[in-house]
Amino acid sequence: MTVRRIMGIETEYGISVPGDPTANPMVLSGRVVTAYATQVGMRAARAGWDYEDEAPLRDARGFDMARGNADPSQLTDEEDPTLANVVLTNGARLYVDHAHPEYSSPEVTSPRDAIIWDRAGESVMREAVRLLSGPDRPGVNLYKNNTDGKGASYGTHENYLMSRSTPFSEIVRHLIPFFVARQVMCGSGRVGLGVESGKPGFQLAQRSDFFEVEVGLETTLKRPLINTRDEPHAVADRYRRLHVILGDANHCDVTNLLKLGTTSLVLGMIEDGAVGQDLTVDKPVEALHRLSHDPSLRATVEVAGRRTMTGVQLLWSYYELVDSWLEKRYAGELDADTAEVMQRWEQVLTKLERDPMEAAREIDWVAKLKTLESYRARDGLDWSDHRLRAIDIQWSDVRADKGLFNRLLAAGRFEQLVDEAAVQQAVVEPPTDTRAFFRGTCLAKFPHEVAAASWDSVIFDVRSQPSLQRVPMLEPERGTKAHVGPLLEKAASAEELLRLLADDAPRAD
Picture: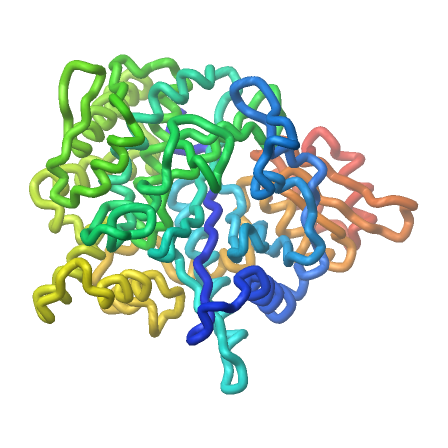
């Protein structure tokens, strides 16, 4: 029970055509996916998505939503043949989701690896933009953000594998206050207040204003702080996949590390039944909005009906609880990943408490606010000025020479935690310590014999078999390089691999 667990990030990218605001976003998104899959990821282009184990209407509270009552956006278990949907050799999924191109990273086991394969997704999208540009093409722009500033929001979802034995009510009870406060560290910053950015100002998080309820199954309407979708993509009676829809798309490595790492630690504490303090927040949805709207970090929320706390103070409470839990569990002997997250957590909270601007090299919203304030001071701009909204959008442009964040990153303005060479390797290669290794390596080695894949299966189409052969992968920490690497090296064909797997079934399932 440390920071390490199976985790991953799904990012929907904003999309536009320069000079053509009426362009169809679904068609554009399809062009993005197809351009990359066919011209760069040719080996992955044939493999589609296996929908057999999708169950988007199963609720963690113990029931299934009736299909007739579901919004069409929830029916993600239905294949639309008109939409591009492929699996890449790095184990990721690249597809069109709700009129946006989405990159869903492969499963990883640490926050640092999550950063690497999330940034690999940025590189994938950047290359797709390059492929679609040219003198005779209108081109497509992509943005790693969460709102267009006009009332639309699109998601950056986190996934964490948890123990099924943990009561869902305990997850809800202890995560809601943490999520209300987490934006103080992990928000990406946004110009404008309200769903349609109608009120001038700057806020901490891009997604916060779009949340309306505390708990629910939906993701695109009546958005809940805690999503109840119960689709583990693993052994169902052993695991739960916590699907977090509240977070922002982050650019800063330190912010991303803290988002994944602190959440994983709080979940570990919940799983261990070790949360020894009631931090329940009164009216959490309103509290979420209130904290997001105050970049001074002085806004308070009512905690456990007895006292008021700022967002930073609430995060300090969670930090102290986790620190005490780890000390009792491990007597100070922490693995490197956990020690790094705890050290960064303490350092960032100290800076935010003293002066938020001190965290401009590490935290997204602070970095963006500092940049915007420099423009405001130089040109005398009010928060209602449209130029500030344009800068906000330009901040998240994926192009290296156009995106404002990317330009500042190249100038050394932000602290980087992962090497660019590792990111480029992750564009084409999967993690080695999860089942993503088997998925991605099969696609690279047997591109013409993999018919489809999903998080928990790979489907082969081999000549010797009258039907498709489905290899289940319900244990996320199997199918690793250690488990199946020798078999994949030995197999000269998918047919031979299937024979080897049959002989070695206990290790490869």
